[in-house]
Amino acid sequence: MTATPPDPDPARTPGLEPGGGVAPGDTPPDSGQTSGLSHHEPTPSRGRNVAALVVVLIITVMALGFVVAQVLGWANLF
Image 1 (spheres, rainbow, N blue to C red):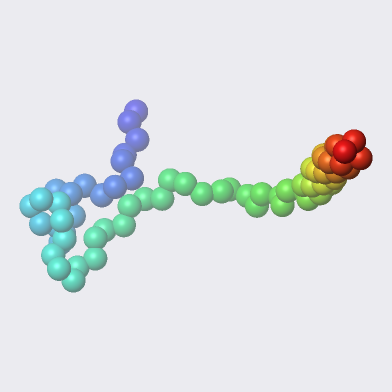
Image 2 (image 1 turned 180 degrees about the vertical axis):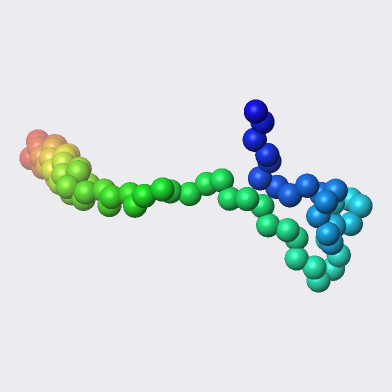
């Protein structure tokens, strides 16, 4: 069994010109909608985002600390 296509048949649709277009000022026919959600999706939690931000901030502060320690260490040698 074959499903019918969602678009209307151009041969049987009034208002279409021979190339399949519509006359100026005319509205083309609607297609059937085949997408959409059947139920509400839950909102994702923000806990993982906050944890990732904290980890990135800690690594950034540690990297800056190492850079400052290296710069101050080299400055004390001269």
